Image 1: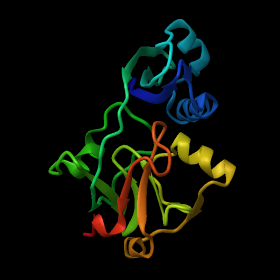
Image 2: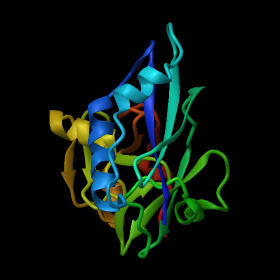
Image 3: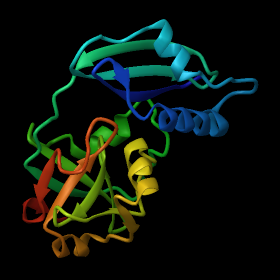
Amino acid sequence: MCRLIFETVKWENGAPCLLPWHQRRMEAAIGVHGSDGASVPDLASVLSDCPGPEGRGVYKCHITYDTRGRVRRTSFEPYRPRQVKTLTCVEMPGLDYSCKWEDRTGLLAAGAALGCDEEALILRNGMVTDTRYSNVVFGDGSFWVTPETFLLPGTKRAFLLSRGDIQECSVRAEDIGKFRFCSLINSMLDPGDVVVRTEDIILC
């Protein structure tokens, strides 16, 4: 069965960000889930054929491709970070989102009843993983650690780990109170962009 996968690339001031990291994740996805003979799309060529907005500004570039290696669509939209004030821990031991599947039904079910400024912090057997749309880092605002039990291998997470800007460690639900803040990170968000105080994290 041919399934759809996507990448979200930050397009800032007329250029893509972290493109090599997105390319590596696509290679890994096709390597594991690709059908026989599938080739990995070259993101640089894809964005050259479908150029994004010029000039200053931040846009979210959504690239959908399939497990045969065919790019289905590319779109751009202006980006503004979602404001999150509360995180609610949701235990989902069987959830697997190790690939960026276009079908996110199981993932979105984790916070179906939450409000617009609330987000789910997903636990698996008491271990902190991710939110529904980001990896997470914990700290006091000057140092950050990220759970080693992540769901999705995020590009920003991998980039920050490679530079030593964040450290990976074990984080259980009961460890959350040891930190002051939780920050959401993904291809569009850096540590500190969207921050929730740990006192505003609701445990199971």
